[in-house]
Image (cartoon, rainbow, N blue to C red; front, side):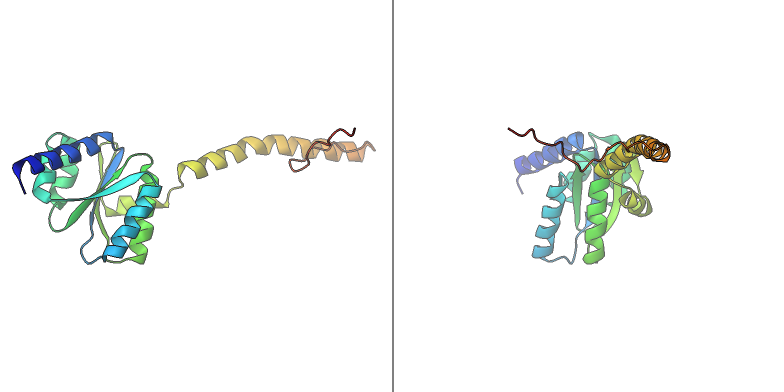
Length: 179
């Protein structure tokens, strides 16, 4: 490998680490090409990228990012790839953990999120957390529930007093005017 190619790789790794919200070091030794391709597709779906790196070049790129270097330096032995999480770190951890269940050759060595080092146990816990979309839907359900209860109570009161219940159904579409 030429010196210019090495410098390009170091710069590329450093730029990706600067853009990423989190990163993971994985050992992919023993995986078949089809499995690696499948993993890359799953990671692409959660806005992340896997890059196979040479350990010496990665360590040189870590010099620009001391927190990453502290978290990853000791695990950079053997065949490694760095998974860069550009959007949601939890989604990437879930994708790696799910893929690791199916393909035992994939080993998650360590990770980093918000400047904090993550060991394998923390990554497994992170993978059990709900994602952003799931949290948003749970929050919206919490906001909706008190008003829905109020409508139910008002309907029960109206029925008890002989009035017609209020039609407050989400599924009911407004009637179209007839011409």
